[in-house]
Image 1 (spheres, helix red, strand yellow):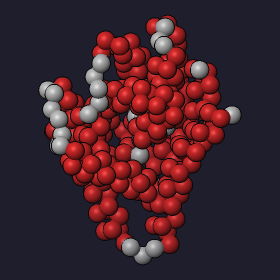
Image 2: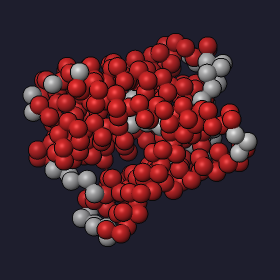
Image 3: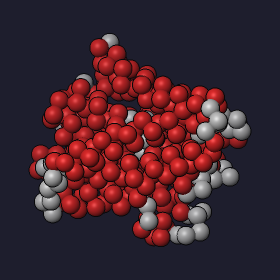
Image 4: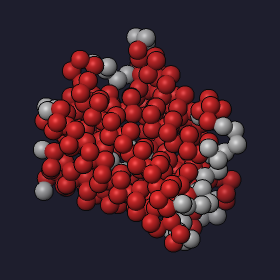
Length: 301
């Protein structure tokens, strides 16, 4: 019960921010230009700052965490493969697959880091940050690939100008080369990243439209099931097989059980995808994870 209440406390504020965005766009007259400008600010400035500062400062101890990384990345690769399986299974149209497939494997790193600290303090935070440092490039490349497939610029062109991917890769390289940021810069980037969390969730709510999703009910349920049920089950099986230490097992399973990142909506919106569908998937997945995430943590304990 304590674990369930801790996770509930962490997830509810995020969902309430989504609800706030949903309400604000309907009761204010700020106009489309305001929301479009806010979207660009988060996508091109604030969220890249968060990705860079987190990946550039993550301790990279491969000797002690090699198996943990294998479990997390194999599970994510499985999510990518299962996500793409939806295309021949459902044969969706109107950018439904290209936009929604990322919700089968992307993860909310904000929630992940918060829960990791509750589970293991600084040790738990370091383990989660290590996973994030390697998983973000894989997740972003897979998500951009799906959308670039229908976005005439092509995969390499879209990846080369994607600020989320560039920030993650540059932060990881900076880390591997032994770079060190001045404290004033760390504080600046951290505060920018913190702003991106709230603003990103508000945009998710602002873009939420539940109408016209009847054609996507089947594939939407499939993506959510893969992310919240199948991936953590795969992680739990692999973690047991690799005989991970207790904390690493909990971190691996929890990572795979996280709901989809709010940045999935930003990516879909910026690349001409079906943003309302992604907003729905994020909202539904976040709400359902209030129940599924504590259950997976209990199974991994």
